[in-house]
Image (cartoon, rainbow, N blue to C red; front, side):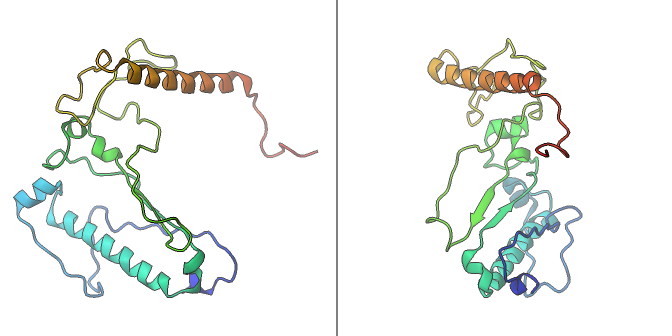
Length: 207
């Protein structure tokens, strides 16, 4: 209701906590019905419990209701909705999970980003490319180096059945491309560290 009263462009943030332990679902839930799965079904899909499963379902249901209400408001026609989570859940039981994702705990860092604005966005499309820096140090593996390019380099396929096999000799061009990108990022960051003197940003730009 407050958003519908806005007469100027606005930026609003809505944080939800429904899909989070202890997975509390309100008694009054606008017709949403709970479902019960067997333990095998839960394990195969990667859910820890029926509470976990229904909490995710309810979050999806509530988001749908929110969009339905927003569509009736005048701001909807020129608004872009950005929907994302903070992290995934580390479940190695899901039968659909690739071996690399289970072995390195990558599902915890696999977080979708949805952009929704049917009247301000191009036609619907799905982008499968990774769109964030690599999560170094959070894949259940030790750091190879700290503060300088490492001597241990490799080219791995986390989607394969042997995610720790080094494929550098099989795909030398792709491996070199990644090495060049990584070292380029490192050298750029190092240059900025030593050539970007400290400034008081509270007074920066003032005369």
